[in-house]
Image 1 (cartoon, rainbow, N blue to C red):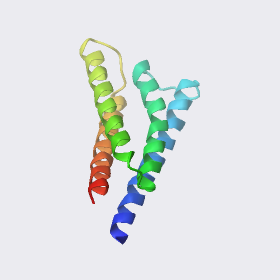
Image 2: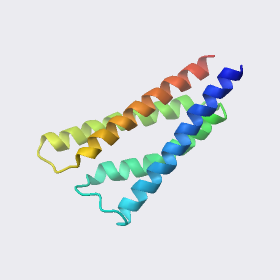
Image 3: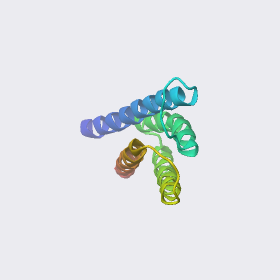
Length: 124
């Protein structure tokens, strides 16, 4: 039982912190406070707005809400879809920053792991 709660708190904390950092960095870029180079606008907007969903999903994981798995899965699927759109943008000659590839890979991996964790917590 203690391990279950610990796993839930760690997953929730990761979601909350990841979301807060995403909102902060995306907000800075959108407000022009940071030179982000060749920004892909739909990726920037998605990531910034998704940061709010990250925080909510993290709170849901932290407090073991029934909907945390569904929200985590939605975040993961939406991230993969935007990543595919980004890939299309790059493949058709669109300008981009290499760090966006790494950032979207990280986001996809984090939400895959959090979604799996939410599924496991839901099932136990």
